Length: 348
Image 1 (cartoon, one colour):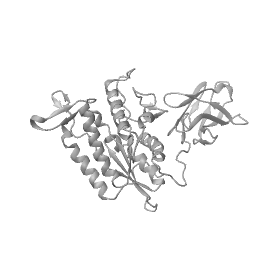
Image 2 (tube, helix red, strand yellow):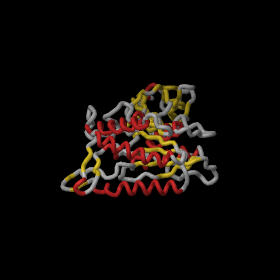
Image 3 (cartoon, helix red, strand yellow):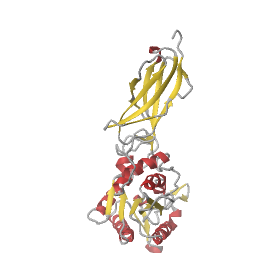
Image 4 (cartoon, one colour):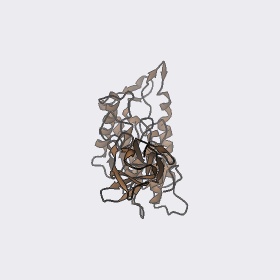
């Protein structure tokens, strides 16, 4: 896997198919991980998502803040989304289309002049218009032979750490219910439950999931979040990755102690991982100093990683090495780079 910088398929790797991503800015931030994992399968990932615009939401009803309509820019959204899809399809038919769009949860502004009106989310007209728009867009893709994967949308992380679902959360649940209904009994359309992956406990959602910061601002994916999503998503698209185990164990990292550190007394060993899929346990292994064999310490999960409170007075002063080791259910493991440090206790 080359990088998470969106480099696409390397020139010497055969391209077996095209994966087209459509939607809004949340879809855009999924691209680095999809490109990194897709590269291993020879899948070319292409971007037809539009920042600030939904896939078929069109013009969003006004939202006035401090005298300004913050949704005014959406007047051009449908044209931009249409142009992005048209341009992508000119390059050839995609094998699969990944649809990730959140703006359709909002109230819609339809019509013009004296016939203009607002369709409130959940109303029968809102539901009918969105279903028609989605059907029209999906046909553009399925008519080329593509399978369209609709991703349910995890609610954004709400400020203030609410203890129960908010009206904003309910808007996402309403949209996801519509997407699920649309996907029923439609050939070449599949709903994948991204919401359950990114917000596993249900709303209100959290920034940290399985010890990873998946969405840095509560809405858009970080690089590690993008990779986390891609590792889950690619196999569900029916895309195999020959010669690569995309469910491999994570790269571990010892956060504390840093190499070269001097520690004493009761000290907390900390570890992190670049993802958490498939991990059943994580341990610390300490060697060196007065130890004649490797000492193994079980970890405790925290919000940000794994830790063990080590009583350094139980070993002699000296130089030691610690590694963090992850295990999966099959007993396979992956180890961090070693961190070498000194234990210096009085009278030790």
